[in-house]
Length: 365
Image (cartoon, rainbow, N blue to C red; front, side):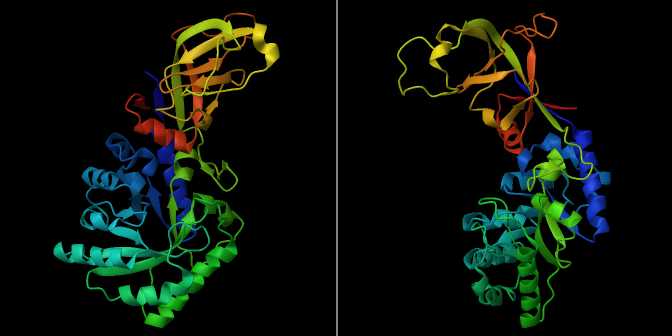
């Protein structure tokens, strides 16, 4: 069985480094664990006392994951990081201490659910800043806030924004300053302080190094930088965070010298994805290794081969084929055999897919 190796010490080290860094800038932050889909073993290994002490909260986009967080540590402050579906407001109040919202109807349902449970549910109102995903339109914000801020069992603790996620709109100083100005506008209009301006994420971290973050921005939601050591803004390592946190190992289940060009009539009924070939390849052969994973497990394009001499051939639902060339090392000796494994560096989305596949073994090291 193919295997995903997870280096927990490296990840815990990244969390602690980010906590130290953000604390120096008086910024609170939420660890976003959605890449792990609520895996309890991971949560128990990562969320140990000396790691979580620097966190404001732990967030996820799945209610089942928040439930698992509470089971692992009932004292954790949890945050639901996407607008809730109205039908699940009771579960949101049960498992999330804080939720991010954009719908007046849903917030009223959350208020009703919180009142039934004798709870005060905290919310962050998300503002649309151009990414065209979740967010209240800016010209509607005052009226929206007016209808929400005095609900009996709802406490508005901040406003936030999402940038750089769907269209990739960059979180520039000007964009984030807009969020700061809306915070001041709301506070002046309603004589009520807002604790958090939540506009930071992994993509925003490099802006801090360039001093391009408004001083009012005081809450970050970070996942990728913790788990991969990089910021998606430039896809580069941030500070000295570890980037060696995950390795994916797939096993060679067949290894034969075969032709480059398939033999027969090719139609559109195939379900796989393959590399193209040229007419001059018709008489050529190479060693083809069949690996024990496929499209149901992970998108091959989100895997980076550690051995750069290997080339992708094709993939189907449960097997993937790679070209090993002449399968010889620099000394002319056979390089790979059946039963050997090939190592890949998985991307963020690859890790999420692999962790959700019941056909991939997970190994915490």
